[in-house]
Length: 129
Image (cartoon, rainbow, N blue to C red):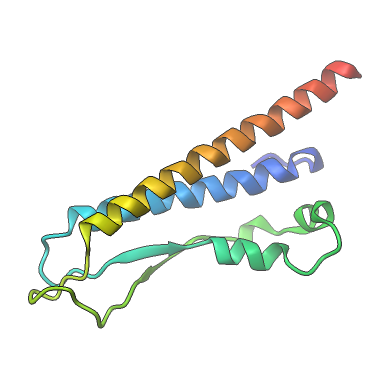
């Protein structure tokens, strides 16, 4: 985390990228446990936390500047713990996991691209001064 007001957006994007990377690990773990009897699918909650943190203010700049990123953490939860697709108690569908993994990877690469764009803007601003 960079401790400067100029990097507020970068810090938020970095936190989101970290959560997305973490979700990638959780989804891969679900796939690895697709044949484990009794295993229940897990997922990561972060996007709703971020949406709640930035909601309700006049400008995004003020919101991002005022965010306490230490309180904005991704959490793991067990999805539909009582549901099972199979007789062995496992509720992992490999096809669904692969789709979620692909979506998550696109999200991650998009966030990394946004971080790079923010640094490019800062670099351009520095060059013009």
